Length: 223
Image (cartoon, rainbow, N blue to C red; front, side, top):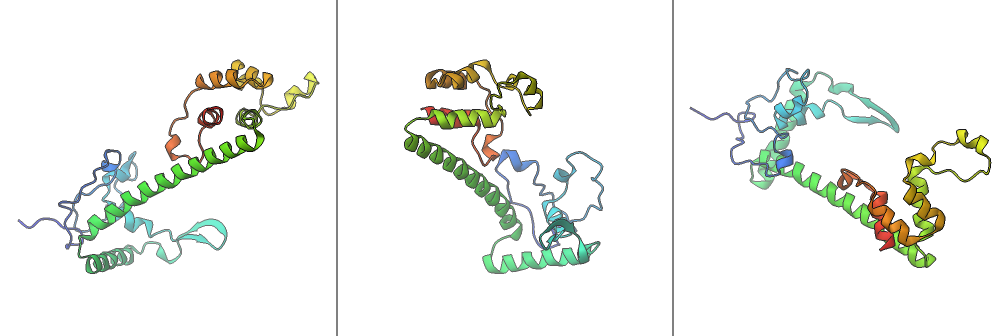
């Protein structure tokens, strides 16, 4: 029995997603025509059940922004499934001709490379923040001015008004910040601040952030 191939031309055999975090979300189940007619739209995480090539075809339905306005438009791409199908098939044929490789494997590899590349860019962005903080410490000859500013910005600590009657007008109160952290800032004590920072909770998913967490910036600044 002949094996099922996408577009009747390319097999998914040998195409492997080695990243365990992405493996269950990049569906490589072979189908002749990558079109499920929305049968998974009412199911949570339904995209993981949809062939990755069909997801690429569906992406073509929304070309992007119109001018400078952030308005997604469908334009002439609405309900043109056959047009999308032909575009992707033709693109795969070009990839196969130019690389001599299975275009499905090239496409999946491109997805992984893009994700890895984005993570590297985010890491570099965080390193630039650390370098900027270090430069500030060097210029000021003291880490406390920037450290104090970081804590105040992070916890939205208002300036002291000297009038308790106006406290209700502030956006935030000191209850959001630990007493040890606030006390260290008020006393301008770098040792106490360093100890207080160690007790702060870690920021989850920092690896997908453009900026380091306040905790890590302070630890780096006070080291």
